[in-house]
Amino acid sequence: MSDMPRFIRFISRTSLVAQIVVGLVAGALLALFIPAAAKSVALLGDLFVQALKAVAPILVFVLVTSSLANHKRGQPTHIRPIILLYAFGTLSAAAVAVLASFMFPTTLTLVSGTADVTPPSGVGAVLQTLLFNIADNPVRALLNGNFIGILAWAIGLGFAFRHASESTRHLISDLSDGVTLIVKVVIRFAPLGVFGLVAGTLADSGFDVLLGYVRLLLVLVGAMLFMALVMNPLIVFWQIRRNPYPLVFTCLRESGITAFFTRSSAANIPVNMQLCQRLGLHKDTYSVSIPLGATINMGGAAITITVLTLAAVNTLGIQVDIATAVLLSLLAAVCACGASGVAGGSLLLIPLACSLFGISNDLAMQVVAVGFIIGVVQDSAETALNSSTDVLFTAASCIAHGDIEAGNEEPV
Image (cartoon, helix red, strand yellow):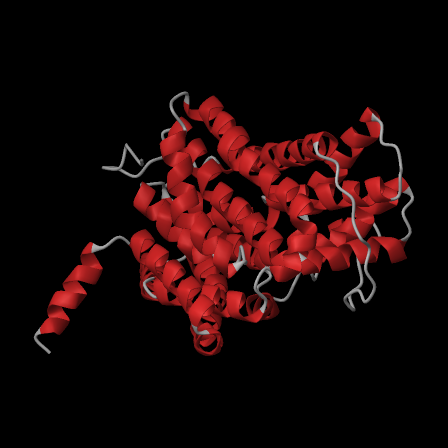
């Protein structure tokens, strides 16, 4: 018992990121040497992801409502520039994917036995889904994790509560603080969660199945790394006019790592909220931009859609000119922004992009099946890029406009 306080003090002094790295290494070693035990501890990972998904919708709803209800008049939030950064970043990611696919062309061994899923019939169907998500019932939106619908209701109630009594607005603020405290407790279990996720994933699937798709994975992950380490820093430098890499590495380390293993932008919303708070960003800004980014800032999805579509094009021997490549970039960017509103995420939007080249739906769904095979790496890298970029662009815009909480003028 006398050792327990010392152990707790050690944990409290060690950074959360360092603890997560320890969990990562421990999970990999357990899966390598004792696979049976690794499958058992996978429960820890599933429980952690479930806890994040459970708390994320109510966190977004309460935090956005509280921020708008208690917003001080004259305090800018700079949401519009952040949305423009999201759009520009997603389009840039699609363009990077096109260039990567032209420089390192890949082909596929098309497979049978596609997943029992139905892709959207066109861009109109994607946009229609987004519109219906906005008009969703608030209770159903919370139950299903429909963040577009949650945001719509939170914004509406937030503006309505501006006219409420001071005590009501104070109650909403206290409720926001209470939910935030619960989120902090959940995030403290991230090392155990990552330990379970890594151990379970490696024990169940390993990476043998991925060896046949090494070249495709290299193009996919390489394009995402180029976006994260070259294009995103250039965009941030354009905003803040100083060395962007301290902020870039902070976001990748503290948001990207957890997103890589949870493989869910929605589950990573609480992590991103906590990171924005530690960076000293203004709560009225990040409480809206982070959940919004989890639904529309999809650079990783744009890369996945573009690379797999062009791999199918190369497999079938279809020639692609510059104009068609530009059109594909635009289509992939638009589709990626609606990926979260479609069951199955970015992979189910591949048939839509394939239709641009006249590829039949049957062949396109075989490409989707390949996507599911490599998903253990592709989806993880995609989510890490998407989620870390949410914080990165929010922070860059806040720094550029001086939207920093008092006493936190230097967020990195």
